[in-house]
Image (tube, one colour):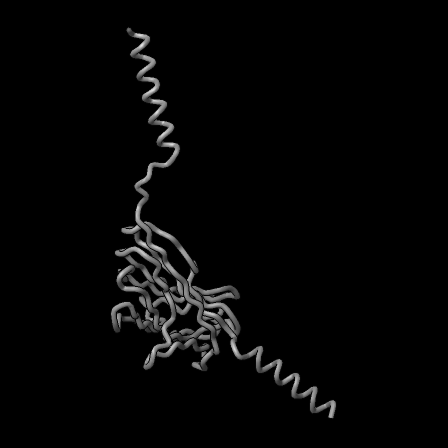
Length: 197
């Protein structure tokens, strides 16, 4: 009986430990910028197994606040310009981007590029066009899958953590330093006028 309980307990611990082997997250998780300022976010993977061979992700944002201007793939799955893999992406709806990449590299080549730390899968570039807070999240909408696969094509169970970008208006209230500078200049002018008179 004790042996059976121990086996069940070990199995449960292993199952919960392997339920999520990796995490894909938005970096930075939060940033605040002025309207009209370009902003970028990285899609980063961390976890075990460390070798990512492919991914297919859908990223959502508020299109009234952010406007996608560019996409750059990381080099940790190979250089697409050297045909070490294939990748692409496209906006499938306002505020929804579908991107993918598949590496053609061998295990030692991937290990050399990815090392042991977090890896940047891609970077998204936005213009800030409206005020407010836009989530930048991984969309699990119907007909859209979020997949991270290892070098053999097996799906890596992963968690997906989004981020946010806050877009604010420039402050129209002068800062205290500007007021002090203005008053000291006016005082100096008055002092010079009195002295001259």
